[in-house]
Image 1 (spheres, rainbow, N blue to C red):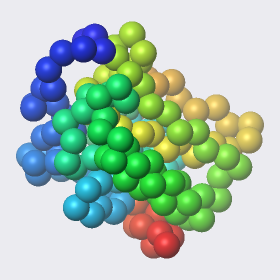
Image 2 (image 1 turned 90 degrees about the vertical axis):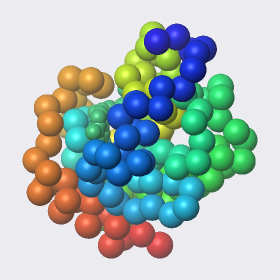
Image 3 (image 1 turned 30 degrees about the horizontal axis):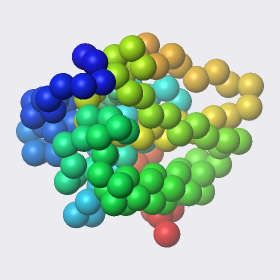
Length: 145
Ligand code: AMP
């Protein structure tokens, strides 16, 4: 899929937001949802999406929505660091198929990093155990300010 085109209302995150597919939620409000990536590149990999926008990528996102989304990403990253004590973390955001994007509903990745520990490749990680994701989500949620 290119950078231009129509929003697919049946993309996996749209279906999650409509409640058609389960997710392991970390936290949500009226504007954003933070949930566990089911193919985590490292332990504690969280995704943050807008509930209100149908922007597929950074070029399309409304500035005020981007403001809320980046604030939510920062809030979630703080909780990830407090809960899991990584040595660092990566914020990733991919645009267009050629840019590495696989789900065309704009989202930010929060990927905790530990020194000396490689992360799994984007799109090459195995599916995580749901109970383990729930445990991680609960730990991160408990660390939210
Ligand atoms: P991107 O390639 O940047 O579009 O990222 C999409 C992300 O969504 C990948 O990291 C996938 O592992 C993740 N993903 C795909 N399906 C699901 C799902 N049902 N629940 C949670 N994360 C998902």
